[in-house]
Image (cartoon, rainbow, N blue to C red):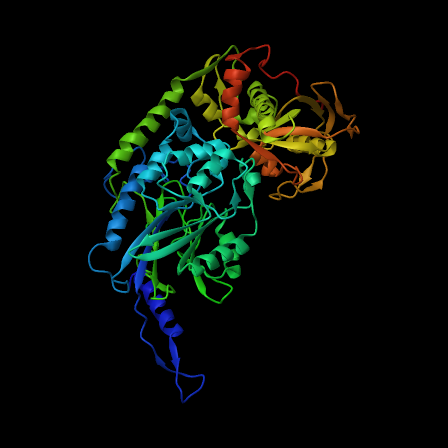
Length: 618
């Protein structure tokens, strides 16, 4: 028996057990088993999430020995064009011909996105450079989505870019979130007025009305740049209110699609819900699959597909998600009775379906999407190597061990870029201008010396490749600043990703003194405070630390990246509030080179070996 046949048998047994009929003559005993209830309507829910601008696909673990390469796209797995082709194929199969055993004669399809439709990086830079409609918008429009949830990355570049992404759909796709208030952002409120940003959406499928409630993570202000968009954290209350409202309007099939960053958040929410038939989660990137499901080489299933949770009314609710980057198209096949109650799922077809150009399940990419999206994006990325953003009169040291153990001129350049960008964006995001900046050495990734001469846009992505955003942390106590610097030199003289390159200040440290000790993986919980940092002076002459002691005075505002502000590398920010200011650290570097330095990196400003911002004294 195949794995999927076994799963279907388990479902059939469970359905039969749930339908036990108690004999009138023997109270509490099961004397007969009712026949499985025949579904009146079968809904195929096809879903993606966290596409995150991986338009050109992925390589997997590099092995492509599963069979012939059927589709010679940019990369063997994933890609926007293959995803579009697969969605078209599965939609057609869902409603064509005789229904499979266990499905209703009346069948329909709902196609949706769980959000995080784009992400910072060279691929999305192509969209920003192109303008509306973004390449990401064109790819998603070609998917034929009935709706999309609003994720957190939609706000990474600020609400205007969110609105521009939605503009690219020309009103054909509603964006759904019931716990966002966009009235403080005119560009988004315009979409709300036009009905392209909504709290819920009802789709009529084969005469059946299916309601969808959307939810966005309450963590939005700390993980993205929503500015004046307000987020209501009462997820269960909001979902239940809308479920009740939809039911009152005669909608008896209700899905919750929630972008909560971790499927365990959805599982924890279900016991508080009423009236929701299924939950599609997004934002966590978990791989859910069963034995026998075909995965991209290198991927491993974390749990089964679907998961189940019990709601507030004692009803079992299927909970699903899939990982992103255009790698899988999730498929949840729900069987409803005439009253709109879920009576089971089709275990055979409920699964993640991988997107591949290799092997027996390979599919050729949609030609239009390949020509209009993938080819120009690939050409743009190739052109980054030819796009000169500055000329450097000095070699810039980004060698891995150097940026993780001592001051380097490239480290100074990166820290100065954060400080410059923080000051440029401060007024727009309602934060004070930063006085100092901190860039973790582990976030500088080119591992090379960039020679004198042209610095290209590709160089900036090699230096700062992550989707990390500039973040401003206001009112940092001086003792906290000292302990942040202590974290940077705790491993010295050994190299560490936590070693920090700094801007706006100079400091000295003594490795003979007590190193800071933190609880590993705690996000910066200090076990033993460090005593290595001896002198800290801001560029304006303000003394922060003298002879190893913090000098009383007002707090300091810091620019860093959001990874570090959240306690990445165990930086001890102590949970201080911070605001991402709508620009990546790569974007900050590129704009600082072009605008802040007018395209010129001088040896006077960035001498080889640094300029004494970080000085060991023992």
